[in-house]
Image 1 (cartoon, rainbow, N blue to C red):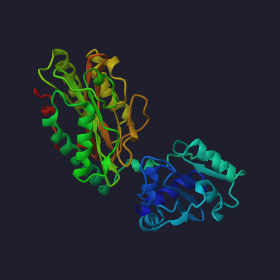
Image 2: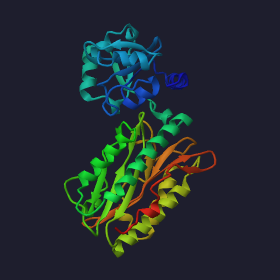
Image 3: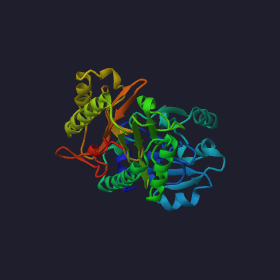
Image 4: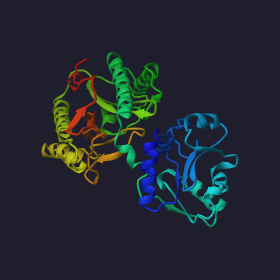
Length: 366
């Protein structure tokens, strides 16, 4: 965390006439304060930030008080002995304020109701700007952390390849990857690891189960490590045994779509155009109905953040954006192929961050 981030947020608050802002997103809480304790995926439980004209506060419970004071020296730490809502309502900084702006996506309904009960006269309103928006453009230090998470991820996937044989279950493969992440220095997985084989590979977000991998199947592996809070995200597809004609066909199409999407990355380019570059090629080859999800998304403290590469996106790419490009084709009852790379948008274009597990090595006959 740097003072520059706080100044950026203050400017946003001033521009939108926001006098008090409650931040409950774990990623935004860490980004603006430096406070790392608690579960990075759970809202409210580990604490919240409050920004007012009178100061900035980190409200947390006794489990994290010492960590908060050490990690967030620019914030006044408030120990929430009666829960977030009552502790928030008791702060003198909120006296006289009529409106508290918050992040609706990161405050539970129960949390909302509790704050209303604690301060009945206080109006709760959604922040009129994206509180996490400044996170989209990464600093050099953040880029290094994402790259480290990616190095760990690629090393784990490379270690899995010799073990990916018929008889191994999807769950065993996922467990191996997540264990490797930790062995190599990561905090753990950035998201639930996906290992999907055979017909399961036709489901983009299939959960790894007890199904055994069989010869003749495609296996989609989508995973990422988390290192010092920052995420990585890659997807690889392996064909086990002798590939079939339809597998070779959709693999080649997806690979070409990936390359077209990566080539379209450039500063100032609408994200929807990048999506169209890949999606249009898949559609032209007759598989448009079998690619339903967005082409990609930003990656940082959260695994999915701005910008979003989708047909409906209004985002525009800027230098410092780290984005995934991940086209896929999914054939119900048969299987699927998805390939994903991680790229950094630069002043002149884009730079691939992946260094290992080359795409050409994925299509291997075991």
